[in-house]
Image 1 (cartoon, helix red, strand yellow):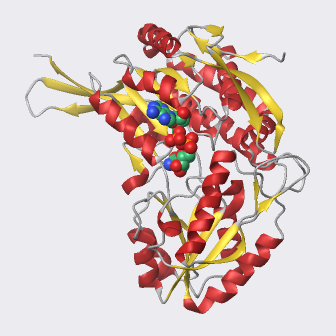
Image 2: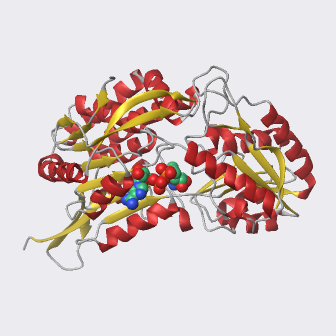
Image 3: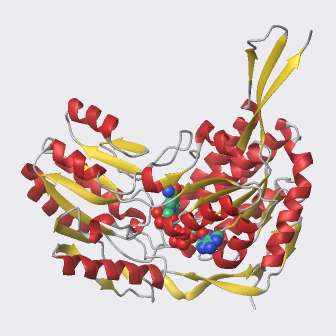
Length: 482
Ligand code: NAD
């Protein structure tokens, strides 16, 4: 029997009430590891431990917090190949993508190590004589973290690092599909010197462990990344609890990439293929709608299909693989369902969309390119979360912008053009939280705000110095000094 990876509660590694076999989507015969699933009672113990640790940790020296985060960063970066391999093995993104994500996690911890030292406030002159005002930021309390499967180490990193930097304590529930990277990250942080109770790991299903965190009165705030339907439940639970919880939600997207007639065709094709299909299309910022002007449409579609033909879909860990498998059977079923819906709706499956068999049993799917789509079709409106993109033909820039904004989502958007006028107008008028000019809709920096508008996000932005909006609370103190 192989090692059991345990939950981490109140400074102890503890077994759960059941065991989760972490399956490799590139080879379903390969079990990445056995991970303990926590019970609701264990989630409550974790919350109690985080609550007990909060007074001391929130008043700890910024130097102590800096040093722990820096140490964690150093270890993550030193082990990036190994952590990247684990990530690719459990999630299915290619090895270079997995190593890239592990590297990103290390950079995030490095950035927030610095942020621990940079937390500042304001001294303001009062409108009343003799009164001084200080505006300061304090830690929020126990933060519940609920994360999705598609970025198994980067998303936990961009939540855990700022929470710790600003003095909060944590109960962390990673996605049940990818506990391996989460476990490795917590192990690194524990050995970097976190005091007992500051960080707790409770692995398991959203419906029990996640729900227990949402319902507990001692959890002051919830940071959630995942689907819109779960996000809605999370927000409702946060408002229903007493006291109400601060909440931050990062959810889905239906991100448009506009391609104008004046675009550099080669650049547009690379931008489109990277944004829509790399990481198997399983990125919240993935382009899923190509909105293409009439004059370049046919050339663009032919060139994208040609490029897709040259991409290797295979085992995530194999050298030369460009696109790994879909994460699991449920997601594959969803992708195939939408491919069928697209055909039924009258879109043309221009290229791909076939199930593939490889040496080992896995969830392999050829990238799918639909043409002759309208923006009212379900494949153009609903998040598929797989390697499936729809091309919508438009006559001019104005129509392109209108179609790009005609969505309930607003995470990321992009435009390929050589016109400064259209690039500038699009940056200003795109209803998305992140706008890319001649760059893929997916792929962001770690030191600037991340998040969207409309149905994609709710609450303060994540990442960069903006993270302090969620992970701190403001205090305004008045002093009469005579
Ligand atoms: P999901 O909503 O199914 O699950 C997300 C997390 O919520 C998991 O940890 C899950 O166990 C937990 N959960 C489920 N039900 C719960 C409940 N009732 N109470 C508490 N927790 C519960 O999402 P997923 O399938 O893991 O991830 C894919 C989704 O995440 C996509 O919609 C994608 O767009 C989105 N996503 C968004 C961003 C972003 O930053 N905007 C980034 C990555 C992924």
